[in-house]
Length: 247
Image (cartoon, rainbow, N blue to C red; front, side, top):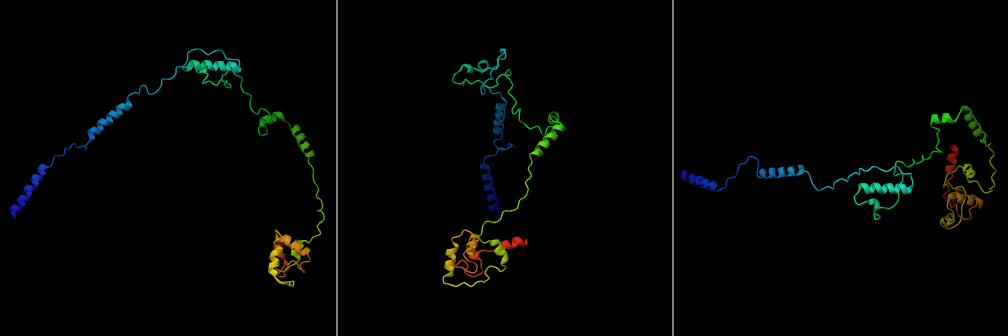
């Protein structure tokens, strides 16, 4: 048993001797290269950049001319002179880039623009302004003038009804029975078909009920508008009028 174990141990030592040695830097592989690249990057960022930005335009040291008189021609001339003095290439004399339109109020010497809405603005909420413009007597006169314009409209009696047709509101209040309660006898054939054809002529049940009462209803129903004999044509319902009265 001793010889096989010795043979295995010797074989393991031989294989270990063939493996290359791993350097132990203590900081991980490639750390030196990374540190060198980081140093170069920091130096590049800290170095001043030359030639990447254009030099600022020099401000002209020449004195400005006397304020112009506010005319368009004088304002345009002054603007062109300032542009020529502060920009390379003389934009004031360059017809390709200058529109030729004088700027509005380009010079401080121009007259101030008028105050917008100087007249017509209500000062009712400004106590100082109102106190200087009005007095107790003037307010009393204004109140009196306003009262003189009032007109009191007296109530008048309602006009009499000129429509001689049936009143479905009165009819609904006079008849207490519900919808579908047979009160009148209806005879004939094809009552359902007549009912559908007759009621299709009206856009609202109120109109159908008025026509039904005008044609002799509820006792007579020649058009077949009330096949169940309850006195209400084309599914007309009197209950809304009754509830309005009852509250």
